[in-house]
Amino acid sequence: MLPDRYLRDVRGSPAPVTIPLTFGPAPYTFVPVAGFSELWQAPLRASRGVYLWCFEFEGALLVNYVGKAGGSGGFETRLRTEHRDWERGFHNAVVDIDLLKRGVYRAFQTSMTPEHLRDQLRELRPLYRLILIPLQTDAECRGVEAGLVQLMRKDADVFQFLANKDKSRGYKKPCSLAFPSDAPSLIGMTAAIPRSLREAVNRARSQPLGS
Image (tube, rainbow, N blue to C red; front, side, top):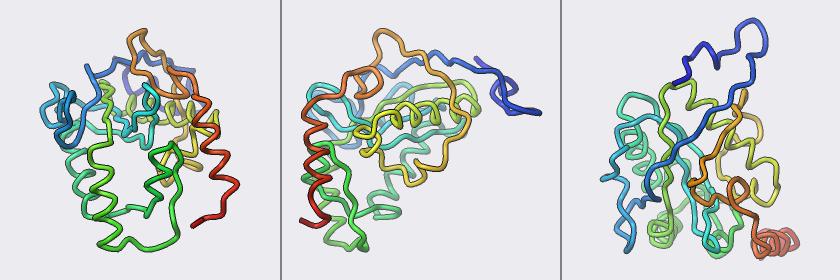
């Protein structure tokens, strides 16, 4: 465990910190999906840590959202709230679902309607895979969350899929991260970036919004 004082910026920049990561035993789902366990039965559900909303992509996982859960209630409390808000359409963007399935995040500048929300929930509920990274302190959670966003930022084709609204200006003071040999295959972090992802992103960039 790394005490908060090692991660806090006190009278200048702190010394670089590397956090060794551990992962939950498997990707979880929000709803019943054959071959997966639901998040609500995860042994680590009461732990604090960082979590990833992902999509499966060519045998690996492409991260769509990075979040953190504090010590009060841990993953379950945080993700129940976040999942409930998502299902109610709070903070949701209207996205191109077909492109999302191909690894491209494209949001429309339009308000969420009940019809949009219904369609998105029907399509996306069974597709999300949840990765849990348990940690010991809230300071570690902040540093790891920032570190993961920083890793994704290194490649534009990976970073474009991240739906965090403050991804471009937030997440300061990232920690260096040490991934274990049995870490999940996370595209752009522990797995190579598939050629098909780059091709899908390039095609989308050449098409005007709404085409």
